[in-house]
Image: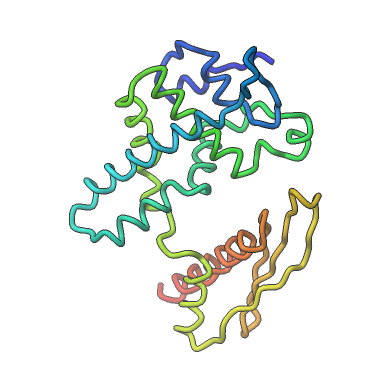
Length: 233
């Protein structure tokens, strides 16, 4: 299938020189392609390189952006900015989900929306951009798209934040219950309900129980924090 790179070029602010390189960056391992030498034709090697480009750029960015913050803060900020969640959201922002090349089974199971696949593709595109243009251009792209996330990322994981809010209000620890499981064994989706002792709850899904717990806790934290804001107005 011919890939239309025009939208991606607009986001990158770069006219692609090597379209095969970017097609390679968007090819998931489920496609199963190999080249004439029998080497797998997917984005795993580019993902490795893109991860290094991203990690250094983000470390450099936050070191300069927060000159008075201690190492602990910088580490937490760095982890949040290079997390699978952040990468997947930025990948969707630049519409990589519409370009990723997947095997038939992966495509039918909604692979283009999976955070793991989206984040890997985002790293691969960063590597392709670096190779096709320059390290400086790749850095400028990262700075542009990742800087707004400095105000969005969670420096404390949702489960810890939820526990903190409940303890501040004299409530006991939340309870997490699996309310549904679906999908094949290798792609299981879990739905978790988190409840508080005063009857509040939220539900969310994830590709593991831990991810579903974090997602449900995040939802409940948002509900509780919004109520606190309304109360303080």
